[in-house]
Length: 168
Image (cartoon, rainbow, N blue to C red; front, side, top):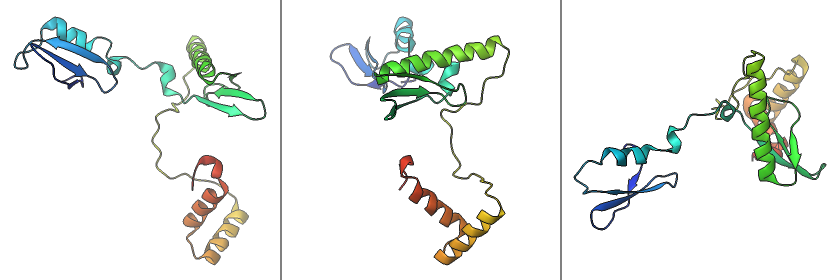
């Protein structure tokens, strides 16, 4: 079906369809017949895939527990500094979404360009780090001692020193 619904069968002259997002709909009529216009409208109504993306959807929103502060802290890097906090993770996320929406309104009211998107980004696996001549030399020599390329050695060091990123 065009809208992404899967036919789950049905008894008699109706069929049951389920969308991967969980939406369920029943359409009367035989499988060989086209759906009536009112049925097509019902299928397409409120389809999550048809909703327009809000400007705030393009920004990564982070909610994490702070041992130091003993609460959840919500932030949106690139859009605002600081953040929101609270004891309930879901409430902090909701408040963070509201704060991001408010900041987008401020950007627009002030005629400022919105920051670059941070959500849904694809990463190439490459980035350039300027380390200075001495550190570059030290890393290159250490890589030679380990029998690795400079790139492989630096990746190894980053993985070894970065368990907080979930890299092993």
